Length: 147
Image 1 (cartoon, helix red, strand yellow):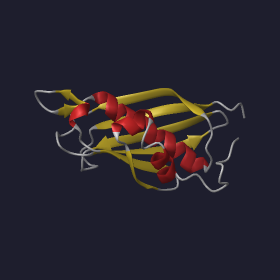
Image 2: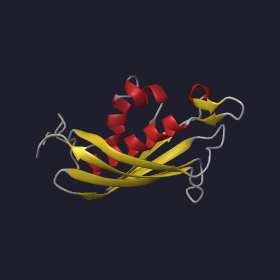
Image 3: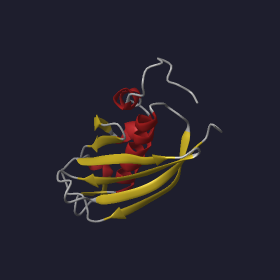
């Protein structure tokens, strides 16, 4: 396994800040909100360039998927307290309703189990009320470092 260059614990806020100006999530404007021992919450502010339906102003599903993929990925690194190369093996997204135009979408990902080569995640996206989610996700990530 590879530790972060600083030797400190994995810091999801610093990770997101590092990639704020480039990469896919940087282009989307993904930002860090908070985290716990096995979860991370990110936000995707409403942006007209992310609209999927110009008539309704509803965000496209792709940016929400990307938000949740990053939130769940970061949750693994937070839980294991180490940055380890990984790939999304499977990610199921159940869209429950469209995100409300003009609102920020929050994505909270949780890592609930880590095995030798696979990590299991779940999460939800909402636009202000966690009791009224936009989407639920469940997925698995495969570690790529061979350990």
